Image 1: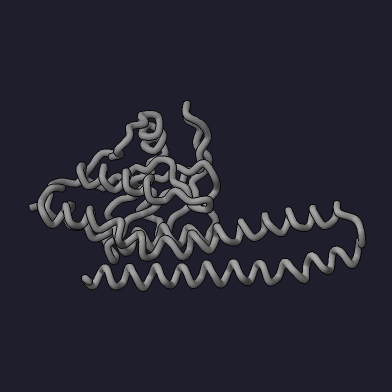
Image 2 (image 1 turned 120 degrees about the horizontal axis):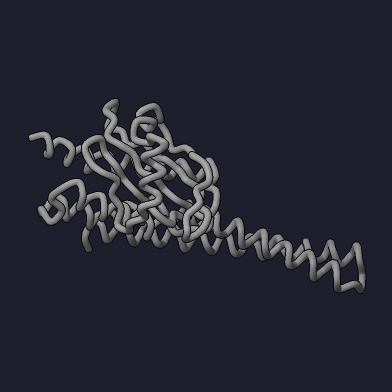
Length: 224
């Protein structure tokens, strides 16, 4: 078994243990909770049903939260590998190709209840706005807002406001791309829902651990 395969196996076992622990804990808590409700309203099914429904909703929300924070770290690295491999093999040859691959990957991967990216765009100091899916109205607004220059003043992802498009209403987030102290550009991210501060940290880690190196590579190669 390969090293990557071994790590994947261990990670999956860890997630199964977490799932079993969470499920058994929820069941264990539900039993005394139902007994408490039944003792407060003996013979009345309505409070029992309402309590059970509310409890199930809380369990599902917390379970979804746990799923996201346990799924992203390992699977992000594994899913991003094909892009790194294509850079190393020479299949991705310039920043335009890289931008299309990264924006497509970002939309496909970040598809979670708490972190859902509907559209993604990337721009560097020496490139136009790049995306795997063209939205001319987005490019126009970002240019009017001078987002490329403004991103130089940012360190972390920020919410830039609400964005209206013919396709619907989106929350606009701007993720600056830095390689150390060297500014490279930014990503514009559209989400149908607001992204909480906790999950914005995942986007910052995504930029810091995955985006800055390949973008820096092609920015430098273009200067040669």
